[in-house]
Image 1 (cartoon, rainbow, N blue to C red):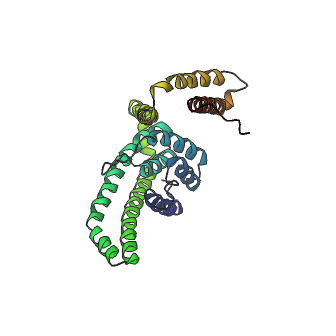
Image 2 (spheres, rainbow, N blue to C red; image 1 turned 90 degrees about the horizontal axis):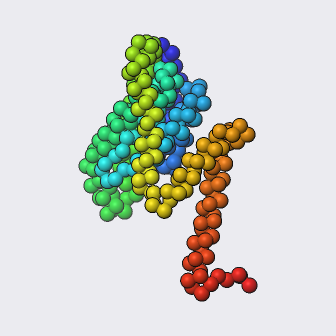
Image 3 (cartoon, rainbow, N blue to C red; image 1 turned 45 degrees about the vertical axis):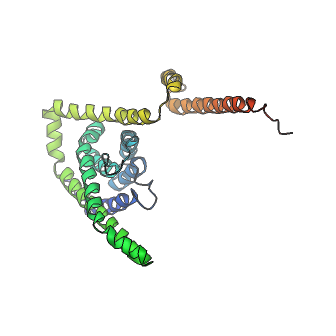
Amino acid sequence: MDFNIVECVLLAILTFFFAIDQFSLTEIVYRPIIACPIIGLVLGDMETGLVVGGTYELMMIGNMPVGGAQPPNAVLGGIVAMIFAVKANMDTNAALGACMIFATFGQYVVTLTFTIMSGLMAKADKAAEEANPKGITNVLNISMLILGSLFAVITVLAYVGGTAMSETLQSLNENASWFMGGLSAAGLMMRFVGFGVLLKIMFANDMWGYLLAGFALALIFGNVGATASAALILVAFVGIMLALIDFKLSSMSKNAGNGGMSDGI
């Protein structure tokens, strides 16, 4: 059992901050692509933090809360995936598959906090009527304290459990490879599901050509020795070029309908 009290305390503090950051403060640091490398730094495995953060960001990128309906939580899922991957020595994809249980539970924690705070909104309304900013601030502080504390407690439990069960999970990986393989497949699939949700929201029919061209370019660059290491960057450059050309052509077409373009002279 590789339990480290310093790691545990730092994880609790970071989780408290990330939980608040979802709705206040920067509203960007809590995102997995930023938070997971920070967690990796605390756990001593920055590389895993970058891999898990980038992958989990793809899983969460299209998930947006609508009213009281909360998607799987980006904070708890990412932190628990890091704990499973680093402290329990799980495969990255399997850790991402297993973390979805905690991510879904995080959804209920947020909903519970909102439910509790709905009863305190009358105090905030009264403070607003009395022009009492301190009263409003107190209500907001209570909300942040509840949410941050609940998230921190869950993270500590996950850290203790993941550390204590590392040998059990390793044995399960060896003796029940079919189960761990299923978790890995689920984790591998979820990133495409998340990106698919984003495409469903944003995608337009006239963009199919660009999407297919991007896949083709990624395969071409990725299978050429000289460009394989920078394939995604090169595809991004091509995408920027096409976007600029499309913008230029659209501007010319719009100006042509208004009597032509001006050369600025």
